[in-house]
Image (tube, one colour):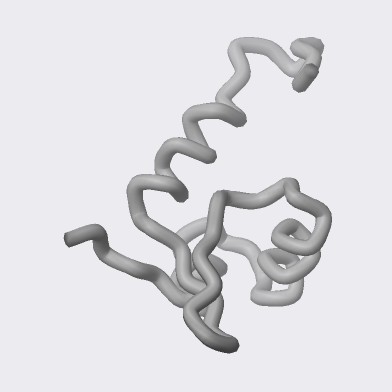
Length: 64
C-alpha cells in the first residue's frame, strides 16, 4: 500500500510553500497527485519520481 502525503507534508519535504504546491498542481508542473473527494494526496513514489525527472547535470540543460 503506497504512503499518501498531503499538501502540507509535500511542501515541507520539498522546502516549498503550500501555495507553490497548489500553483504547480494547477499548472501541471508538480508531482502526480490523486483527488480523493475534495482532498489532494501525493504518493511518495510519485514525488520521488518527479524529483528524479527534474534532476539536471548542468544549468544549461533544456527541460524539453
